[in-house]
Amino acid sequence: MGAGGSNGGTRQFLIGLIMMIGGGYLLLNGIVVRPSLGGRIFGVGGMPVTSGMILIPLMFGIGLIFYNAKNRLGWIIAGASLIALVFGVIANTTVQFARLSIFDLLVILVLLVGGAGLFLRSLRKSG
Image 1 (cartoon, rainbow, N blue to C red):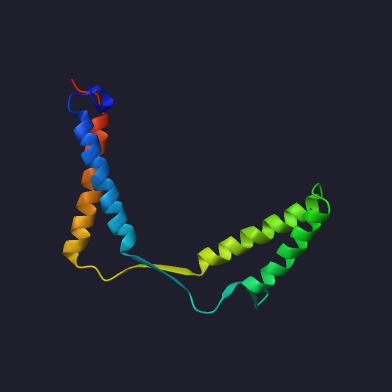
Image 2 (tube, rainbow, N blue to C red):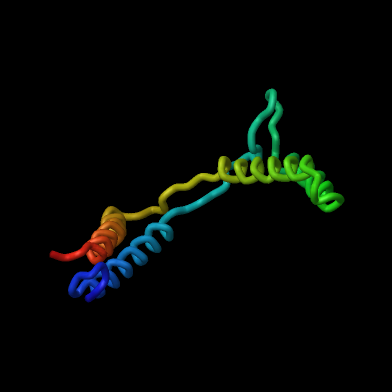
């Protein structure tokens, strides 16, 4: 018995897994991530808030936590600042495909989706 209780399912499982890994690697390798220009995270009342401005309350919150770890205000300030910092980094990131030919994209998609199909078929019970 192989994967999913089917005969020969182990070979389909491994081939599908290898195809998915290869297609996923090629897909992620073909994506370019760049920071947006400006460095501004968001605006409050028309004034831009930069990541440097968010570090000030983060350091204050961390200082409160080190002074007294049970201080809820320190945890709230540090947590909110960290969330705002992560949100700002994600909001100022541009994700785009690198220059791929249609053949390259088709090979990537066939590897990824075909591998997922083989992988899932190997897990299905036969008969």
